[in-house]
Structures are given as structure tokens and as C-alpha cells.
Amino acid sequence: MIRQNSKPSPASALALCVALSVAFSPSIAGANAPQLQDAAGNYGITGASRIHFTVAQVGGGGIVGDFGKFSGNFRIDGANIGRSSVEFTLYPESVETGESRVEDFLKSSAVFDSATYRTVTFRSTSIKQTGPDTAAVEGTLTARGKARKEQFSVKLTDWNNRQISFKIRGSIFRSPYGMDVGTPIYSNVVEFDMNIKGQKH
Image 1 (cartoon, helix red, strand yellow):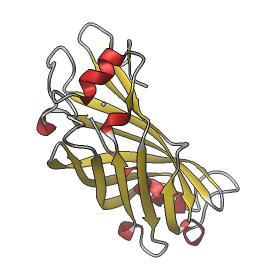
Image 2 (cartoon, helix red, strand yellow; image 1 turned 60 degrees about the vertical axis):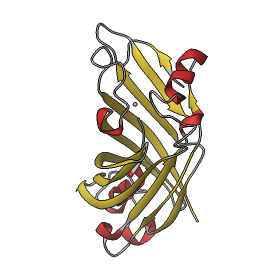
Image 3 (cartoon, rainbow, N blue to C red; image 1 turned 180 degrees about the vertical axis):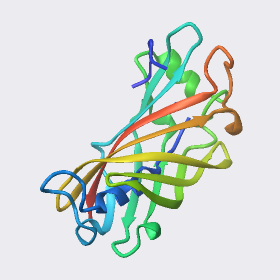
Image 4 (spheres, rainbow, N blue to C red; image 1 turned 60 degrees about the horizontal axis):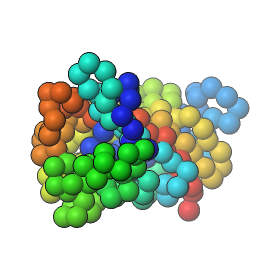
């Protein structure tokens, strides 16, 4: 939920799913470390996921928020991680906050303009494994009709035969998407901190 506090978001990401690639390494600590052939398949992002973001403010405070509505799928290619893919959609009208004034502002034409642009999307273009349980996911983020390349870091946090979880982080500049209102008092950078859970189809 979006709140003003001491912690330092616009959209998408979601490159997160691609992180699945990390799940493939048999060197991940723990007896349940997935093998490539085990983790391969198609997954849907579940409602148990959390899409959290923060925007820092000069002198402390800032905006902290979550998106209550999102959807997405990702595919893990068991033969070639680089051919895995992820698609993710956020719905700006679902942005949540403890203050209706802040919510209304974020949904307004000054920020997300959710009445005109109902979704923020992310589609992966590149997935690279960076460690036994980490990966870098690059893709196209589209918000307010503007598309740009963005990158997210992914870390595997849990796995079993049908479910997988990742910690996704990324920093996105607001200005290229026309959402830089309030700068420099409010940071031009949105920090995403997401917990993504996938269910195998």
C-alpha cells in the first residue's frame, strides 16, 4: 500500500519472472534445488505476489506503495535459459495508499493517468543467469504510451515441484515516462522491491 514515510515507484516491471532462470542451477544450496528439467514449464503469477515501490523525498519521507491488481505469465525453457520469457501487467488504478489524497494524485494525469492508460506492461527481451540463484532480466516497459528498455535483478527464494518464488528489484527513472512531477523534491527514481510467486500450469 502507498504511504508517506521515511522510506524512499512507476511501473513494471516485471522482468521478475524471467528470473526463473536462476532456479535451474543444481548448485543452489538446499536439497530442493531445482534441476533445469524440473523447473521448465509455463507459470502464472499468483495473487500472493507483492508489487511494492518507493519514491524518496529530500529531507526524509517519501511515497511508499503497492499495486493491488496485476497479472502475468512466464515460461522457463529447460534447454536454453536465454529463450525463457516473461510478460507482466500492472493496473495503475489499483495503486493503494493509506491516504486517498495520495492515491488520487498517483492515478491522476500528473502521474499514471490511469483513466487514459489503464495498464503498465513489461515484456522480456533478454534473460541472463548471473549466479547460481540470480539472474538479470531485460525487457521493454511501457507506461503512459512510452516504451523503454529496463532491467531487473532477480533472486530465487523458494521452489518446489509446482511453485516458485523470486525477489525482484529494479530502479526506474520517472521522467522518460512523463511522470517526473515533484522533482527534485521527490526523487526521479522509483525503486521496485517485488516478491513474485508463480504457479505451474
